[in-house]
Length: 247
Image 1 (cartoon, rainbow, N blue to C red):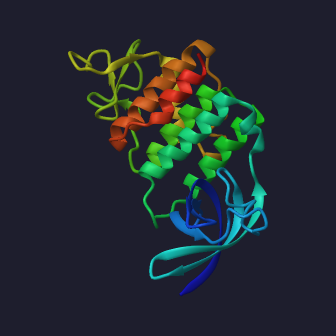
Image 2 (image 1 turned 180 degrees about the horizontal axis):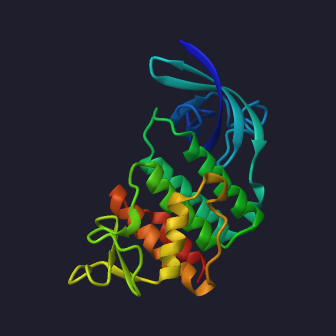
């Protein structure tokens, strides 16, 4: 049996037993874990406030034979304002769905938790356009997960830019107008290519720090969500609900 502390964010909870919860937590040191929180559904429980979706806490956990138990959660942030906007709440839930379906249990990359928390903060504070936050999360997360797209230049001839560039989502690569040929690669505005390069190659501190014409943000968003779906082999129900919430 091992007892340890880590900070983590709750992605999902599921009731079990009379008053317990199964809590899915994205942790800094151990990636995605599933922990039992005994009595957490009781308002009197010391776990009640911390075992909520989006709750970010300093957590005390025990691991025994591969099973985790949540002993205490010192709540740091709830991102409460997400609940004041249906589109922002749905987008945050979409991020959780992506992580729940694709993150590897027990495999840690601290930048994944950092990316998730930064996305929630910007959403909650309404500091960036939702489409921009969504695109950064999707593309940077794909890169962190081992699916770094080849965006330096044309994957065939190496050209950095031509008047028209194309993105091949299936191959995760750029193609110039000469090399695209009869491929199914999508023609992409150069400003969107620049945004994708920024998301993938920038230092983490500045990954959300770029601007794009509002008319091009949905173009970027379709590319990044399509790429994440292709490289993960997953379809995400809450992505469709997010777009529906904007209508």
